[in-house]
Image (cartoon, rainbow, N blue to C red; front, side, top):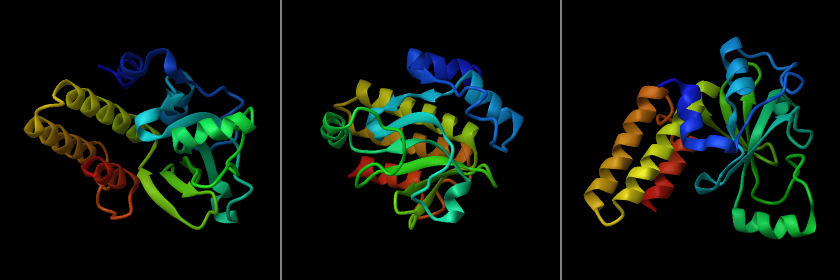
Length: 191
C-alpha cells in the first residue's frame, strides 16, 4: 500500500494538505513537497498531543537559527488547549502558551525537529517528512494493536517492541539520541 493510501486509510478526512502558496518558499525535495500538497498530515493526533496547521513561515519568538524552520504544527496538552481556546479564538503562531512545542521542517536539512517556544531546546524527530508520516502510521497501527489487546500485557509489550523496530527500519537514527522525540513518546508509553 502506498504512503498516500495508508495515510488516507488511517486518518481519512482528518488530513490537511499544504497549498502551493504555503510551501512556495520552502527548499525541500520534490517528494516531500508532493507529500505535503497531496497527502498532508492529520489536523490532530490527540494521543500524541499534536495539532497540525501547515504553513507557518517562521517563528519570530525563536532564535535566528530556528528561523529556518517551516512549522508543521504544535505539540500540546489537549486539556490546556480547551482552556486556552476559551480565551482565544484561533491558534495562529507558536508564541502560544507555556508548554507548547513547535514541530517543523528544518529548511537546511529537511530534518523534522521539535523546538520549545523559547527556542532554547530542540530535539530530533525524523530525518524528513516522509519518515515522519511513516512513523505516524506505525504509531497508529501500534495503538490499534494495543486497543485490541488491552487485557493482554504480553501482546501490548510486543506491539510496543514491534513499533520500536519499525521506527528503526523507517529512520535508523530516530532512537539513537537519548533526547529524541520518538524516544520520549516510547518512554511515555511505558510510563
